[in-house]
Each structure stands twice: as structure tokens, then as C-alpha cells.
Length: 168
Image (cartoon, rainbow, N blue to C red; front, side, top):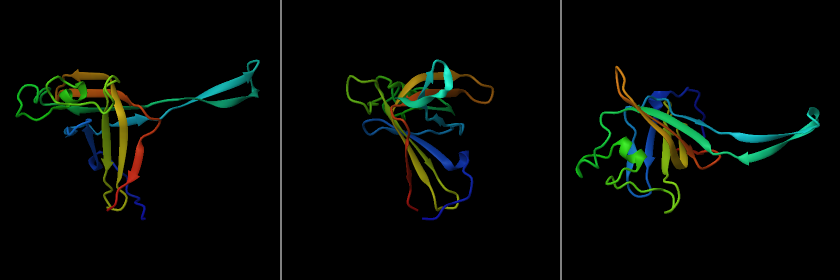
């Protein structure tokens, strides 16, 4: 398979959020600032405080942190009218009346699946990055001069996302 040397940027990506049922939403008006961090905990075992005679051990696994922000036109749609489209706020908040269901079993923290597709401008090496069991830590709405923003911060209950090459 060919490798592309064209750098990707915010014009090449699309974030789609899916629930445990049939609801899914392509995040429109996003800022192109999706970030995720994969962490590895390490235990430093020192000999009486000395690194020279100590060693390193793997620590506990860490979940992946994920964040993004998007401009919003309205916060509720589906919960206001059954014929209006689902809005990002309703999806991320599992708003009552929106029909959004968790990807986790009943009794566990509510989660969603995030799929970030990056299209290769050269058409040879597009990729899909999937974050499973994403749960919300914070959701911040802010007013702005040019646009109001909704900023999501959460975690994917996995050590790293699943990355797959898409066939062209």
C-alpha cells in the first residue's frame, strides 16, 4: 500500500459521534482542534533515593484523554421538537427526550463512540481513528464575539484509540 507525504490539517478531518443505538452526529462547525493524549504510567523504583542503582517498572494503565470544541447555533433541537435534528449538546449530555443511548451497559457510566476520519488529500492513505466508551468529564459552553463555543473534555476507556487504514 502506498504512503502519502502530504501533511494533514483541519480541512481533512471529520468527527462523527455515535451512541449505542442509531443516533449519530457529524460535528459541524468544529474548530479543528480535536486532541487526544495517550499516557503511560511508570514507577520509578529507587535504591535509597538513588536513580543510579534503581530501575523502572510499568505502572497502571491510563485511559486516553480527548477534547474538542465546536461552534453552536442552538443547544437543543430533538428535545424541543420531535421533528428537529439532534444537537451536539443533547448528544453529549444524554438529554432526556433526545433518544440518545449509551454504548456502555446499563448501570455503567454513559459513554459514546467517537470516530475521527482523516482523508488523505492524495487519496492513498486515509485513516479512521476510533475512540470507544468515551465519557464526559467537562462540557463548557462559552459566548464569543464571532461564535458561541461548546468545549468537550473527556476520556476514552482504552489505553489508545483504534487506528485503521481506509481502502481507497
